[in-house]
Image 1 (tube, rainbow, N blue to C red):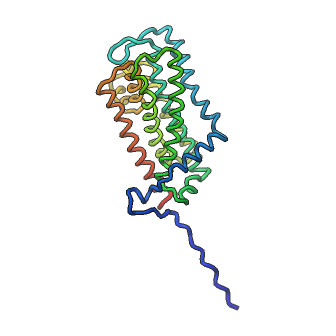
Image 2: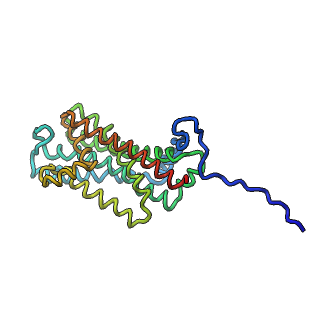
Image 3: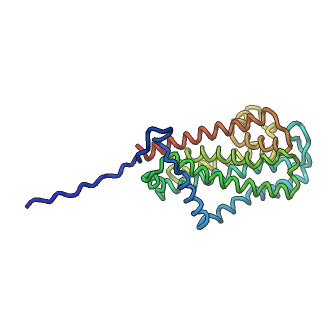
Length: 282
């Protein structure tokens, strides 16, 4: 008795076929909005409480350190050598920290769960989405979170009378620049981490960077060798950039700090796309 021929099963390719006759056609399906739409639906149904709670940490720092410690410290030296109240000194730094925290959460722990447990990216890349669609979609969601935190924190600063320069209006788009810089690199780094113990490395890096990046006191209190190390860290550039805008001290150094995050973002998007392609589209 002969065995009837089984219908052939066509295997679905792991690598979606993209038009090769257009730029980035091999990795970009021009549908990052699908990733963004899914992100907003998740926020509306499940993650809104987590999103809101992250806003209060820098605000509590501002109230505790600015109003509490600020009453004892008085005035400190700000950008350009001008004397400013201690509360006005740390508020721009905490705004930069707020943008960083929002972006890092979305691009690390959120990505880690989707990558290692939910296997969400594997499912996405079985569709018409490419690795750059996924990278841009997730980075946009981190950017959205940073934007919310920046607007909320700016509102607090206005209420407390800490906005004294017209240049301060640029602090919101700069917060987005800081957020996208951290998010683009954070997602790529997370792709290498495989356990919760490894994820603790992120906190091990983020907390010292927050404490030492001239956030709460001037960088000049540290030895010169340590100052150079701090100046290589992205948060220090974000803090200085925000502080310059807050007091209206705009110079070539201000543009240099902004350029740092432009380069960081370009590198981060390329890094993340390369990692997703290497992980799923072999």
